[in-house]
Image (cartoon, rainbow, N blue to C red; front, side, top):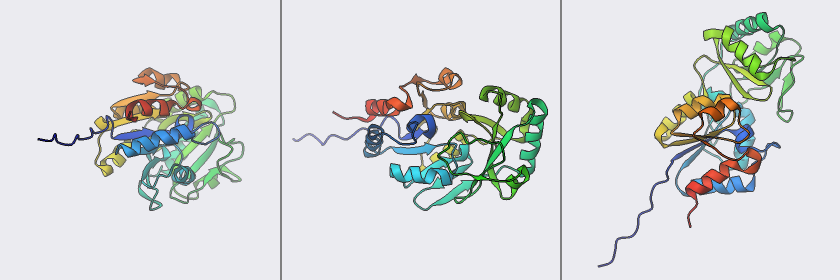
Length: 276
């Protein structure tokens, strides 16, 4: 009697959540061939790859095209769940503009002048920057406005803040101390301290997207490099920090891989999904 055909085992993780800047992306905003090949292994195994990023949907769309992603992506630090194939937001939450102004005023009361930018809500939203604000990613498109009041002309998903002398850690710590329930404070990269709607994190957006896909936290493997990835690591079954990660994220990671420049995500995915 012939033996029954062997059944393939399900992947150890059915949901792979990757941050972009400092994690999947190299410094020149590209994804290496090795990383693309590793993501192809994930797809062949039947697992889902979700980009989970602080970038708003309009700034993510070209990268998703390069990755061949036509499904969901979590954008804007969790404030947006974007359907790339349909080019629409399945879900979004905005930051109240009056609360944002109040929060900035409280921060400036402690540290003096800060410089602000905003990401507008929607799939065609702009990034607006006030005088004095320097874009941490000079390749990302932004529109300079004449004065701060012009930042609030349309609904926004978040505010980005910079200070000319304080470090990111110092600015973020002060903001958390004084903002309270007005907004959630995150630090997502060099020169990127952000205010987003209270209670919104990468984890809330990822959980919503996972639910839409019929997946759960216990099936999730997450990769990241900055403190804004901590909620995502707390939510997922396993969190892997890049070698270039911020110490706060490294402290809570289950594993440290190589840097984004050295294909750290690919190294882990190859180990988990490659077949002989």
